[in-house]
Image (cartoon, rainbow, N blue to C red; front, side, top):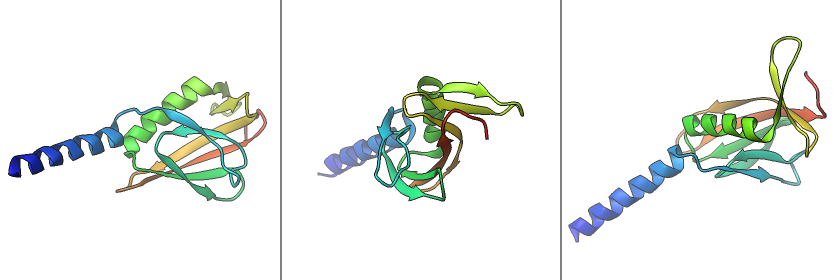
Length: 124
């Protein structure tokens, strides 16, 4: 019985570590309360918009995993534009929005992240 409990505990730890740290892909997230669809890391929950065009999400994923996933999302789903002030923005031609940036706050059991975006294809 003790061996079975140890085995189950090891399996749970491996699954939790996998969800928190492994790249698990992304999904296009749409919500009636979200101004435009956004591609976000898997296992994300929409918390709401903080003002116009700042979407807030929570995830069970670690801050490190979210950072890796967001960089992959921007590289694979968006067109990079350099602005006059040497900042980069990311254009989504399908949904006609521009991602200006994101922030990630590590937490346990949930990390939070925000995505700042706007309509159209433009620098700020």
